[in-house]
Length: 223
Ligand code: DC
Image (cartoon, rainbow, N blue to C red; front, side, top):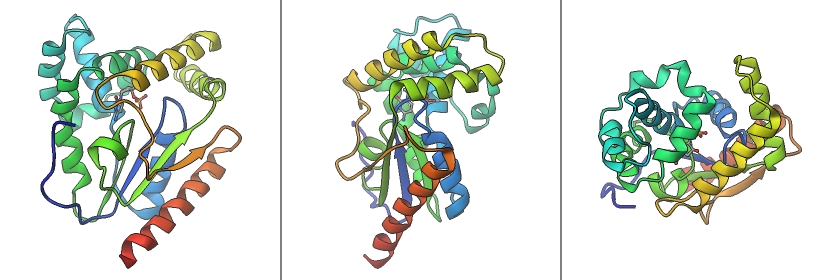
């Protein structure tokens, strides 16, 4: 991490990290409703940068162009439904390897985290880099085959024609790129609670996450 926030965090922040299609987005949303906290899906920031690069026909490996695109991201752009496509996910993972792109998106995420009343952020490096001082941290995982099937169903429902085999290959490639990159690789924070959702329904996973966060909040309030 190049940035450091000199102000200590005084609000209740929940960091939800994990690989693609682990269920972290759904879990973060349900935690948001349960604890009445705003949620930021930080993957959308990288997806926005990736899409902007594709639209401008820039090379995704060009870190200068990607950093310039990252500097222009605004909250209203995150509403674009095209950001949920497979193409946007792949482009996001490619631009996310550039340290300066990550640096350009740090402030947006840290500002969201510091808002009054607390917040929930989901991503890959929230508990390790963006909010290492978060009082509650979850790392949500599931087996690649389970994640591929979930993502395939989502894509199919959204009208994308793609085979399960291709989606599994995408997931494995993304896990490798997101986990092996030098800048802020996807890792559970040492103080994160691991939640493997492979054998869980959405509501079982959300309940388990809620219990973990409730316990963290009780500890935070008494500290
Ligand atoms: O969570 P997602 O599938 O929408 O994320 C898309 C890509 O963005 C992911 O493959 C890696 C990158 N990403 C990241 O590097 N750091 C984050 N905090 C969130 C996403």
